[in-house]
Image 1 (tube, rainbow, N blue to C red):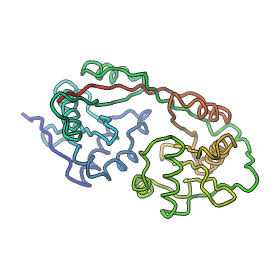
Image 2 (cartoon, rainbow, N blue to C red):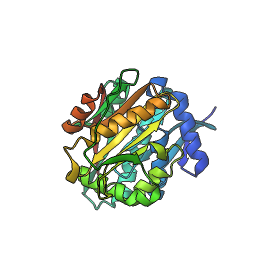
Image 3 (cartoon, rainbow, N blue to C red):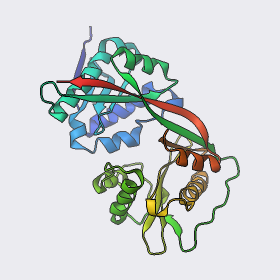
Image 4 (cartoon, rainbow, N blue to C red):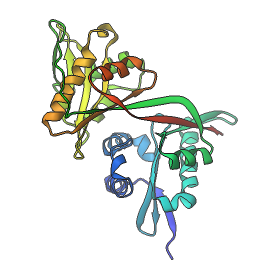
Length: 300
């Protein structure tokens, strides 16, 4: 009789074990949903996140994994038949990561967060059963069929779209991201991690350059073997908003993805980012699905 065991992440071999498990148990229709191979690779570049990663086994057979990222999100995959014996342990592991990472004093609290498609009823039920409360945060995922005609665009005089030159522009792109979204998350180091992942294609990492050479906006595209292309994130520096730069980037991104044989383009944005949603709709994107967010209070 085999027994269920778990251990901490031990290195590159475990990364491949995690991806193999994801590919084995996820339906083909969800294979590129977050977290996908690229986002997991980006996350596990962080020593702190690697320390917050655990794998579960039935005998020698991998059956699940879970980790907590630097935004306190619990991310996991688990074979369905092990939900009862292992699911609660994964949530408990996530809570332990929050307590140790925050160094919570006695009586202090924080939250462990999680998300899933609103139509993924099994995972919604799982989160609620394990003490997660749905928040008002929503992420909108949009799709554009590339078989339909792609419009042309016209940039303001003196502006141009080109691929990123290389890692020497990481700092400028990260700065543009922080200014656009009002967040400190995208550091130069985080940008370099993205540019060093195995699936990164610099020719699809597009920037809009202002006449003075400043990076005014960017859009990081990617092409998947499944035939799905991605055109996000899209970010425009506040100094250059309302000039049609995001629209131009989406159109150019779609053209390049179509040239690479992609059947569709996809993007995600905050449910509060109405401007981005309207921009995407203006070039043919439509709502594909929504992701809802949950939180679980963790008290020391």
